[in-house]
Length: 196
Image (cartoon, rainbow, N blue to C red):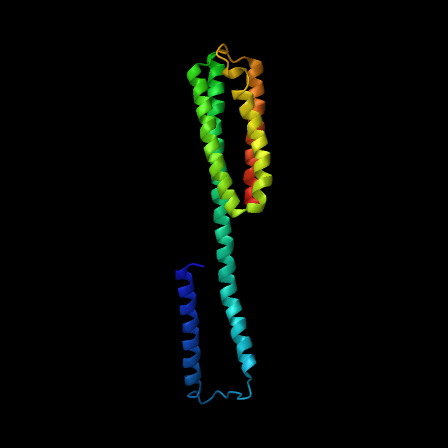
């Protein structure tokens, strides 16, 4: 809890005590209402506890749920940003296939996009580790194996050889399969994060 929240709870408690005192003082002045003087202290405490639980617990639970929801939404947005980054690699391959040629600049751009993606993945891992430390290792291992398969296909395969200047149908199909597999892992991760 922040200091401001603690202060607000303290002020609410003091206000309840003041209202209770004022009600007790005014109660004597009400002529038509008879008050049972045999009420025990624990019964009064029980009523106060019940009212306190009825008021403060829903507020705390609602805040906890809202905070958790905002973290999940933020993590899902991070994954969507990674998908967008990775889609630029797919776009480079597609434009190279359609034009019938791929240049060294396109290959350098692909390497740079993978570097950018790895930076995004590192920050996502840190955020996931803070918010959901028990789930981080399991989810990231699946993601990393899928990512490495796709990256190795492009950067460790024939694409990066200087004599590779034309993207043929076979390479384009294989790339689409690898990309779809990895993109699928990212989309599944969005659903997994939202279920935490």
